[in-house]
Length: 310
Image (cartoon, rainbow, N blue to C red; front, side, top):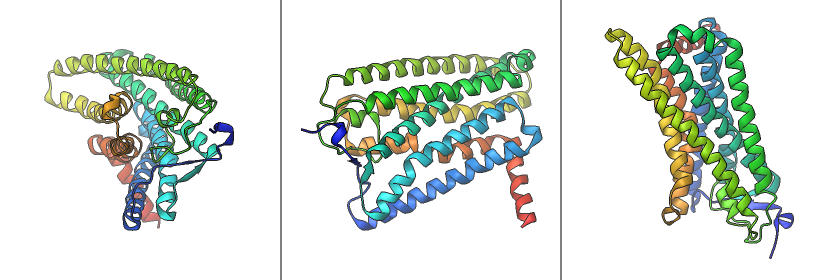
């Protein structure tokens, strides 16, 4: 019988059993993380340096790139370290910090995706009111609200989860610290408080999801009424990347947390966690840059300018 005060570290799930596979996973994670760092870094630099990109859509995209950088830097470096050095340990405080920052960045990403959906809705369905509803001050307030809400949500979950007494060992069936796997170690009925917080977060997320679905129904109805084919193409080119990112993010997160217990297994949980915490930060820059001509041109100018200077 042990409790959280006597636990100094947790044991994470090993990504592979053999040394060769461990090194392979290290190389794969290194490649994905470098792609995410490069892609999101280019988006941040292009939007920050390009005066013509100082619009609400690109302002929120810059914030989204920051959440992607934070998300992948929270989980991947420790997984790479464990694969390279053939270890599975993470300190108690390190686990708490990892859980907090992961919830913080994932929460901020979801709220920002919801705000970006509102931006697309106003741009297409209420274009005459765009400057009024999405002025610079309103955009700053919405972004600040997204970051602050994510911070408070992550702080509540982290504080409540790590206040629970733990008496079922210290082995987590995941390659990073995640709430459901820590709750499995709890020996107290007080974990019901954390379940209540999770239900509250799910209800808030479902509210955002319903808003996104409703907004896109209105957006597609408005786009289909545009008489010119060029106008429809331009509207779709700004909406489809966002819709693809939202679909990838929401589908993997919801399936990971809402799947029935009978479907749960270490290998499935591992795949799902990679899909929602590692893959989106690397794919999001590619999805946005492929469809958005303005962003693609800005990134290209940034890269060619850098090469010319060096």
